[in-house]
Length: 258
Image (cartoon, rainbow, N blue to C red; front, side, top):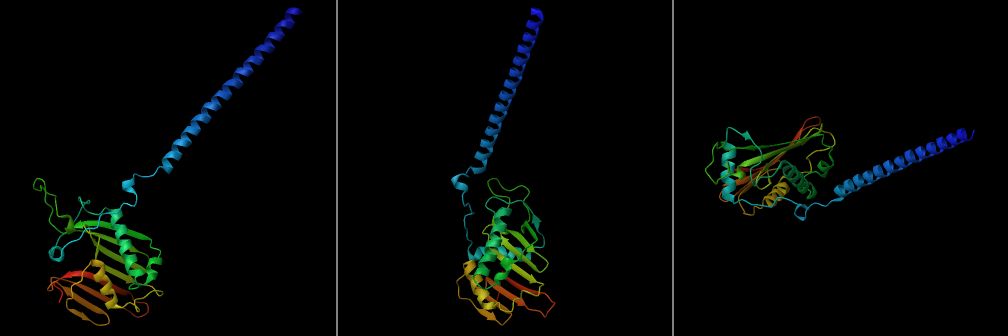
């Protein structure tokens, strides 16, 4: 009888120890999992709040300029070129992200200055495209130490559109300036009736940094102004249509405008 009682006691004690071991393992396992979870959370938190290096904060491409003669040379090649080839950015050229940012910044500049309808900034564009092309023939094997092509001879074509508005902006890939712009409206709620051609030309002139008092020709829908003895010039044109027809506004840099 005593032996049976002792056996039951030993069995009960063994069961208790087994439960304690299992419970202890469970606590230890959960503690390890919690520590791993906290470590992972701390790592993720550190990554998410990590600030970029100081050089990356507010990083924008440095502003560069071209002389009037350089602009004229580029326009001559651009306007006479029969071929264009697409490529990745060369050294010194805007990336796609920078080109889209420069296009948006330029459009905002003209809208906020009042020469373009501010409603353009409120448009909900559903499509954005950007591609980079060069108007020079590609050099398969460039001379040692020289780039494959002059970075100022490439252009970013950036377009945004929706069902009522289509905007195509061509930017010099080196300076980031808009050298050609076309805005089409196919909507009843937006028009160019209040757009003043001369005001737009003057604002575009300032945007490009042109200040020479060249010859000016204009009417209500068309204006041209030349610079540096007609080496380059600005053309601004608008077409306002009847209800149900598209409206067009174009402003650009051109060569040999008189």
